[in-house]
Image (tube, rainbow, N blue to C red; front, side, top):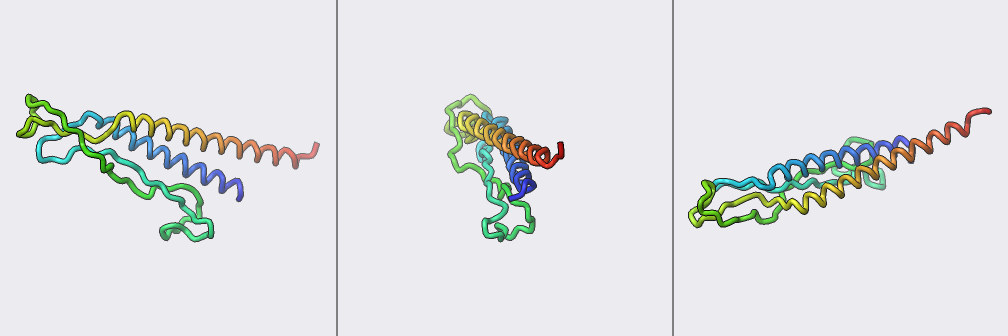
Length: 144
């Protein structure tokens, strides 16, 4: 594996975690959103990652890119149940007095944010280490 492959893999991981953070931010922005009766509430978005290249050299999913790494295969909506709160005075209440809100769990999203931040940091550290190794290799060939 060449150092350009390492940088390509780490770069794709950084990009994937950046997209994950954007989804987390959107989810957190909608944690307290409610909807009118008969409408669909906001559902948490979750990213699906996949390897961009299989080990045998064939590209996953018919990809044409030769770059190994991580890619976002898609975004799915969480299948968790929306929240229902009894609040008959709300203009968003249904006939039984319940208000339907998003299915976003603030605690889960904060855990996801920490996990994404740690994965991002690990990718940056890997790129820094690969850069240090490249610099050491270059300096070892220099004539003194």
